[in-house]
Image (tube, rainbow, N blue to C red):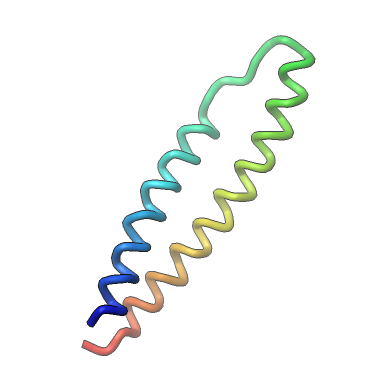
Length: 69
């Protein structure tokens, strides 16, 4: 049962992180060309992290579905 609680806790933490990443991805970009270049690099990194976190979330969901009752 402790393992299931741990999975549920990780699930909640991932949801929070994903929400933060989604908010970061929706932030408008700068109009300054130099800042824009850096922001685009950061946005690409943020999007990659977002994808990984979504995959991690799906793994936890699958683990919880397959967890013995």
